[in-house]
Amino acid sequence: MYRNSEIVDFFRDCIWLKTGHMNALAITIVHPAYESLKRMGRFLHFIAGLLILFNAVHQLQQPSLNHLYFWCQLFIGIDIFIVVFTNRNLVQELPRMNTVFRFIECIIFLGAAAILLSERNFIMGCVLISVSAAYAYLLFCEQKISTAEMVKFNHIGITISGIPQSEFFSWSRINDIDIHYDSISIQTSENKKLYFPLRQNLQFEELDQIHEFCRHYLKT
Image (cartoon, rainbow, N blue to C red; front, side, top):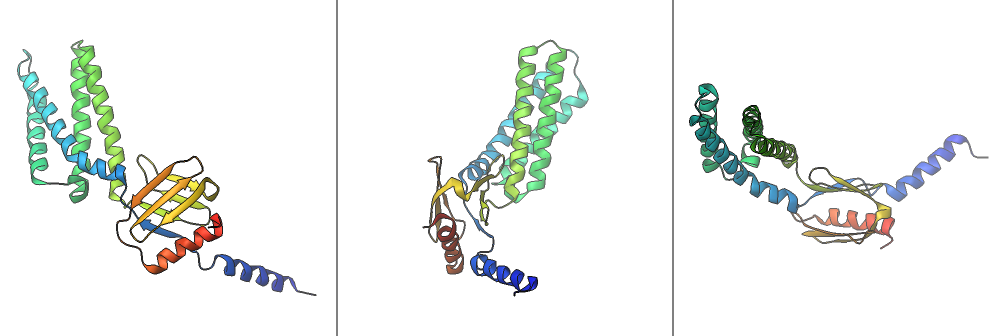
């Protein structure tokens, strides 16, 4: 008769033989949504700077000028333009400064909306509230850019970095994976095809490990 410890060791050895060479793996990709957000970040700062300076000029024309609010907008608008023209990719080069300026832009737009609403200018007030909300959402999305976009493989499925959140696909939802040294293509059961260039070429061991995942879970 086999002892309990021998049975446990037998099943442990079986599990190791089956999955021991397929540890979790993450590969860096070039995600189109991430790249678009990186390219748009500088332009959106420029638009925010224009709107803030425009609102400062508008405040200057009012009979009851709020001097503190006017000078704050003027200096912040000028600072945004300086940062935009001295940094090509603010999101990646200076992520903390980008976060600070994006947050300030949200507050400025919200403050301008409050002033317009108090003046019973409801249409422009609501527009600026929408702009503030859009920039707040942009701020949330930009926080993900600080982390590398990846496709992660494990024994449950794969996780693909995304905006505003990553997407998980169980192996049952995947029909096919076409992997090369410099790109990956994923065909889902919903007839959705996802293609990503890789940030850097795969090593032979990484490529072989992904093929092992496909052979085991996709039977390809």
